[in-house]
Image (tube, rainbow, N blue to C red; front, side, top):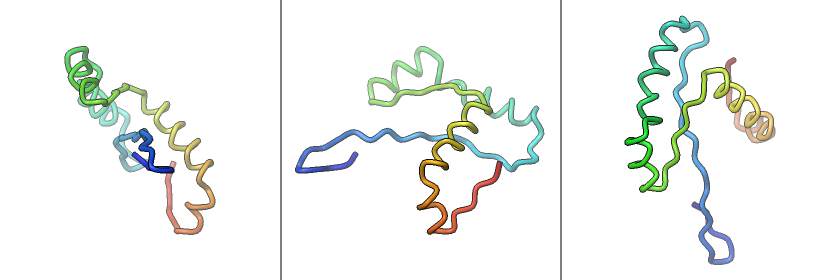
Length: 86
């Protein structure tokens, strides 16, 4: 959440798992399958009551999202010496 002119605005937050670049694909698949529980209807319904929307993006989709967001925030990333790996 953030406030402007005394008005509260919702601010989306994304959460994802990261692994070292050389993590074997079968391990990534197991991790992805383990967190897919959040996309199950009963779990999703419970989370939505709390204002949380879960998605089950593929590893490639999440990597593309991180890349797009990194491009949007290049200046801050460079100023603070943040390092991202592919």
